[in-house]
Length: 294
Ligand SMILES: [Zn+2]
Image (cartoon, rainbow, N blue to C red; front, side, top):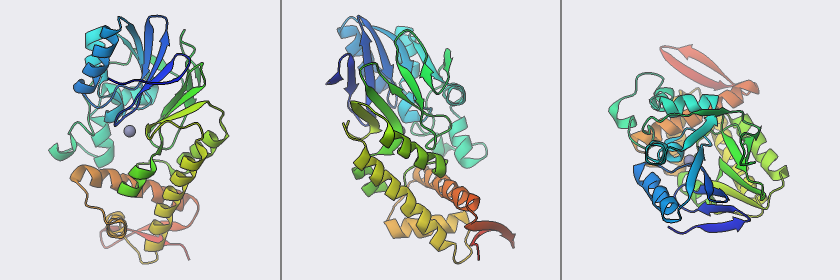
């Protein structure tokens, strides 16, 4: 396993999900744990090979690709797991994620490991801001993408930014990036642009010393989706019809999992447009239609 040194005692394990590493002597903290047991096993092998002790996994949020290695690592090493209260609820009861996306008991196609990780205990509930233990790591609130997601800053000035922003390649490929609260996501981008750090490490993009260009790409991607949703509401449309229009426009071919994720994204954008008075909902002949305000 290749570690990328960033600054001082701060590293990152690059991968589909970048895992943060902070060392204090022989003790290690990691930020997120990857998708599954296999990801956890790789981290455990490295820690054991280096004769280090895993003190704690700081979980930025409860999406399966960020906490999927927790159960394995906790069992193998006895490490502690920290997360905010709301994210901890989903980490401990992971059926809540597909439940949230489907708004009812989820069916088999959306209870896969990408949407529902193995349950694992969170023994330390932390606030979304400030230091939380002897490591001097610091939590920063990064709302928007999920329920109460945090970033983690190390004393070396390395800031792990979780899913507050995504790489340009992923945005080109998927066009619709997961977001529950568009307004919060936009202000999180503004917050990151103003935040000082030696390195910014998004979970799904290369570490960078200047986050501003990537923040701008992410802002443009969010606003483009909002504009298309608003434009589609020129003709009254259901949430699913709006998603079809966006899917056609972006040339997406979605799996069932991607469909429920993107359906949530459309919901997030509709709420943002509704709060600004740009669209409104009306039930007509058994359908919830969204209309552009006159
Ligand atoms: Zn992620």
